Length: 230
Image (cartoon, rainbow, N blue to C red; front, side):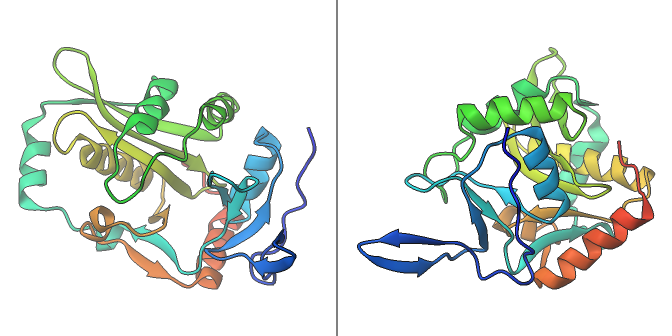
């Protein structure tokens, strides 16, 4: 497995690729193209504030967006209807009980604002191996019949949880999974999580965008503190 020499997101202008005889600088915070989805490459990327996101027609792009979206727990906004549903106790929550089923369900989840999915079979295998190595984690939501009806997965980037994807098969179960995760992270001393890019769903819960340099400093500060969240 070849290790990727990732550039510093603060100093790189991003990779270039040749099209019709002319070079074009990348957009969207891409800092590297190509390479393997090995455990080592994934670990090094996330700890440097970088993540892969499959794009058809391109060698595997690795992103470090500017701005970056995060959710600070003190800014969390819980709608009354969601708070009521959580109090009802209709669901059971677990962590890392069935990572593969969660990522497979996320891959099948339809997203109106995004055609297709970046969670390819290669990604499923790579992140499942990353989970088995102790870096990727899942939250599962189970109904009264013991069926998996919602969840999310993401990566521990050295004390910061980087959210990757969510799914639901019953109303609001992905949001309940997020609330459960936040309660867990709070109990371990965390105060925020990375959501990478803003979505209307997460913005409604209080997420915000910050500059990339601020994100990278926040990430380094948590890593230097040695926070263990799982």
